[in-house]
Length: 411
Image (cartoon, rainbow, N blue to C red; front, side, top):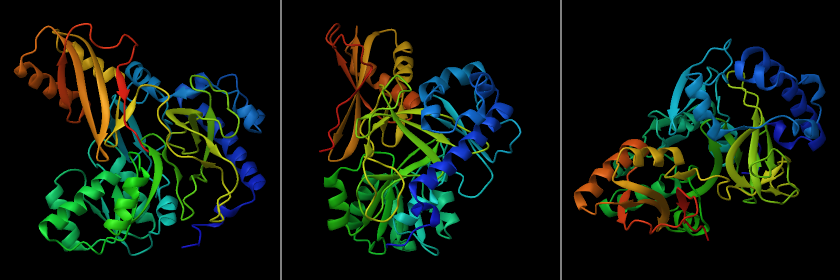
C-alpha cells in the first residue's frame, strides 16, 4: 500500500508552499468579494501582500465558538458563505452552528484520507457517521464515492441491525467512530454472525488510543487508520501506513498557534490548530478549531512530503467532543436555565472501556430521582446525546469556572 493518491502528495516542500500561497491569495480576494463577513474582517488586507506564512500570521483569526453568535446576528451563516456560489446541502451541528456543502465531488477532501487507509475503487463501505443534521456522514460518503466505492449509509445506532447488515452485505470497509466499530463487531460475534469481510477502517470523531486500535486490529481483524476532520473544514489531516503522525491535507494550510492568539508556536510545541481552506462556497481563512496539536518534524516514511501533526491532543477551550459530537459550554448553560432548581452544573466526560460517557453533576435544591430523570431528558434534547445526571449538594462543585471537564485518558 505504498502508492499515493496523486502527485501533489510527493511535491517538493517549496513547490507546495508556493502553490498554497497562490491559492491563499486567490481565496482571500474571493472571500472579500463574495462573503460579507470576510469583506469586513479583511477590508484592510491586500491579497497580493500575503506571500508567505509570516504574512498569513498577521491576518485575524476566526474562532469556531464565535460562529454561534455570528450566525445569531446574521442568520443562517454569519456572512461567511460566499453569496455568489451554489450550495448543495446545509447542515446544523451542535451549538447550533450551520455549515454548507458545495456541489462539487469530494467537497470535504476525504478521498485522499480514504486512499491512504487502503480504500479503492469497487470497495463497499459501511458508513456509520450520522447523515442527520450534521455533515459527518456526507464527509466520508462523498470521499468514498469519489474513489469509486459503493457506500451503505448505515448512520448511527441500532447496533444489532448494523451487525446484521455487515453480515448480509459483506462490506470490506468501515467509516465511523472506532468505539462503534468495536461494538458492532462484538455484537456480531455475540449473535454468531459472519463479519470477516470487514478488513479496513478509516475512523474519526473521537480518540483512537493504542489499546483500542490493537483490539480492533488484532482481535477483530480490521486494519484501522484515522483522520482528523471537522464539520466546517472537512478533512484536515490523515494517517498513512507509516503511522507516524497525521499528514496535512494538500488543499489546506494548517498552522499551530498559541491558544487564544493567532501567533504560531515553534515546531513541536503544542498549540491550537488553525486552518485555512480554499473551498469557494465556504472560504474559511485562519479558522481556529479549538483543537490542540503540534507539528511533527520531518517527512513521513511513506513518501508523502507535506507537514505532519501529532494528531488530536485535547481542546484549547472547554468545548469537547463526545461520541463524535461537539458539546459546547453554551449548551450546558441552556440545560441549567431550563431548570431553576439547579444553581450550578458541570458536565464531566469520561471513558469506560474506550466508550465515551458523560455525567451532568448539578448542584440542586432538590434531590428527587424524578427531577434527575427530568434533567436527563433535557440533556438529551439539548446536547443530542444521552447522559447521566448526578444531583450534588450546593457549593460542592469546584469554584474554577469549568463548565465541561474532560477527564478521559488516552494512554
